[in-house]
Image 1 (tube, helix red, strand yellow):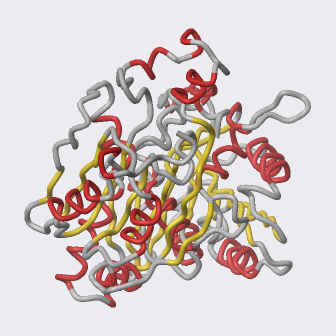
Image 2 (image 1 turned 180 degrees about the vertical axis):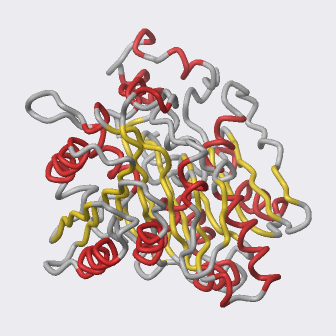
Length: 408
């Protein structure tokens, strides 16, 4: 979302004395326990004046009604509960969400809690808070985002980690497809979190729980992982450590960190692996400066790669060699499409000149291929890196074998 980086001054400072009201976003997929966490926090307000905003995509907001009951029964919460129904605050209700936050802030609560719907994308929620209305007012003028919190069902997550070893034929979707695979949404919710609440831990085995915590840390290493039961999260865990910074909000996932490690290298070599040796967790980047077979690449990514939790990156294939390929793999789904033209292709066609290439792009520029490249992050458990990289290199197209890129 292009408007986030330009507003870093509105939430990059973490000085509680700036007068803005602390705001915590509770996200996570359906059934993870967000409402249970919210109601526990209302019950344990300990004199804090709490305002809660509960979003639901349905016409009847059951979660908001339940929270209202809790707030009325628990005098200690002494706060307001506002509902936004029949839409999602990360997209269709962005304006209404911003207005509601501003109105809540004007009531001067000590803390605002936002429970997002289970299908909300964190980046969209932040974008709604960053946006300014017709009068130039942004919710971030009145509130500061303390943490993005993602609630995860421990039993579900344990199952997903175990499924990484199960043979699967991943569904293939294009980025232009209006449907979004749920597995990718779940990965995005985890990757964006400052705090991950691993809920219902009493329902899973300890060994599986430890492995699952490590898997979450592999996807988003800078997030704090809290293992709780029945949604019992301490207020201090959410408010004392202010981790959110809009300028870096969506650059802290393992994928983004691994990409950043290799910026400017320009060698085509894979980045050094990051390994948690006790659980076999690994993240590495495959980098290369040659085109690959589109069909072979997709077939490989759609097949079972034991232990693979996540993959994301840019590819150069023979399907549309002048356009940048982008892939995102999470769970049982793979999204792939071709984006705009590589800058090298734009130079070759005369559509731009060298002055139009951003300075940071020159850091990764290759004398022969320009910005065309393979750059894919793989994250998983007990990954056979050598086997994966060998397979990818075997898809290389070579002129001396009579293979040519379409359009060349």
